[in-house]
Length: 407
Ligand SMILES: Cc1ncc(COP(=O)(O)O)c(C=O)c1O
Image (cartoon, rainbow, N blue to C red):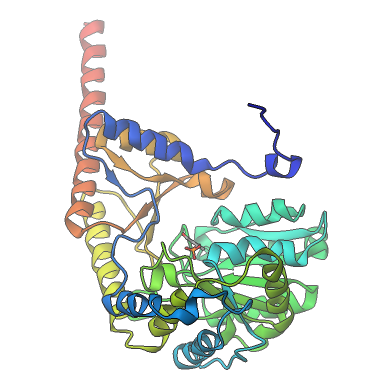
C-alpha cells in the first residue's frame, strides 16, 4: 500500500495536546485502578426527554429524507431569533443574521477561513479552547495571544497588547463563561470590546458555548447585549452544553450580517445543510420549556459547591468558578501543571487537564470538569487530601532518615 504524505497545511495543524492525557488515563485504568476522570469536557447527562421525543417523531417525516435547504430550515432560524429575543432581549433577523452550524466547533474553525488572508493576525485568549488554533492554521493566518490573568478576572487587557499586533489584527476570539478558567464577563467588558474592535477594524467572534451556565443566580451576559456589537461581531452558540446534545452536532452563529453571509457561503461549498429532523428537535429545544436548563445549572452549581468545599477542607485554596462546568485550580509550589496532573493520576487516580495544554498562560493551573456526581467529586478531593498526607509523611520520613544517618 502506498502512503500518501499529508499536505503541508495538514502537517501544520496543532498537535492534540490532550490525546496524551487520554492515553495516560487509559493506561492507569487498564492497570485495574478506579480513575475519577475530571480531565474532559463531555457532558455526563442525557438529552432531555422532550427533545429526544421530538427527534424520534421527526425522523419519520418523509420531508426530512430529502436534501434539506442549504442554509437550514427557516423554522429553526426563526426559533433562534425567538430564543435571543426571549433570553437576551436581542432582536435578530432570522434570514440575514443566523447561520446553522454543525456544532459550535465547526463555526469556530470556519470563521478564520471565511475572513482572513495569509499572514493576517488573529487575537486568541491564552489560556483558551485549543480549537481556535486550528482555524487559524487552516486560514494560514498568524495567532497572537491575549493573556488572561487571575488579577484581571481572566479578561484580556486590550491596553497591554502590542500596537503593531493590534494594527494587523483582523479577528478576535473571546469565550465567556470561559473554558478553562470558569470566569464570566460583564456587559461593560463587552462594551469595551465593541469600542476596541470598532477602533481597530477587528471582527469579534464570541464563543458562548457555556452561555446557559452561570452560578449564584447570575445569568451570563451575551456579547450581543452590548450596544453596537452586531456592527463588529457574532456570537456562536451550541446545543451541546445547554441541552446536553454534544453528540448531535448542532449549533448556530448570530450577529453581524457580513460574517454570517461568509459562513453560509463557505458552508454552501462544504455541505448540504444538516438532517432536518435534528433541526426540528433543536427548534423544540429552543422554544419549549427551559426547566431542563434550570435543573442542569442547579446540578452543576451543587457539584461546584461540594467540590470547592471539599478541596478547601483539605487545605487547597481554590476559587469557585462563576460559570461553565469547569474549576480552574492553582498548582502547588514545586510542580508544573503537567507534573502535578501526572502525580494526581498516578497516586490519587484522579485525572485533571494540565493548564499548559490551553496555552502558556495556563501554566500553574489544572482544569477539572464538574461532570460526575457530587459523591465522586468529594471522593476525588478526599483522595487528593490523602495524597497530601502521604507526601508529607514521606518528607517527614526522609528528614527522620537524615537525622538517623547523621547520628
Ligand atoms: C469553549 C468551547 N467552545 C466550543 C466548544 C464546541 O462545542 P460543540 O462543537 O460541541 O458545539 C466547546 C466544547 O467543548 C468548548 O469548550
